[in-house]
Amino acid sequence: MNDIYCQQIIPGKLKVDIVFETNLVMAFHHTQPYWEHHVVIIPKAHIDSLSNYPNNADLNRDFFEAIRVVTKMFETNFGACRISSNIGNYQTSKHLHWYVHYGKRLVLCQDITD
Image 1: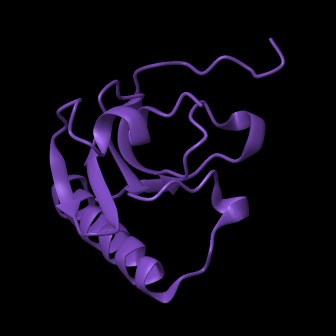
Image 2: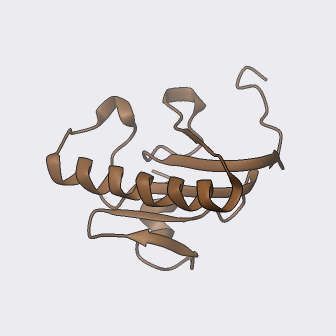
């Protein structure tokens, strides 16, 4: 399994700029942002995607707290933001992650049918 989050980011091998962290989740600035301002929110335990989400009360609490903190930061600094998550073939990394982003698109995504 090629999972940059489990293999590099969570164990601290790849240093990231963390903006929020608990024992269960981590939010950090994307290492190769697709947007001018781009934060990633991940569970620290491996979960393939939202389709396989365990619906655990503690994880739910921490995820929504991370989303609240990061979106509030974006709203305060930029006036708005978007939240998104990819599922299945749209995922480049098979580890559940949410994006919070704002600003111009820096990287154009290639259509998955290409």
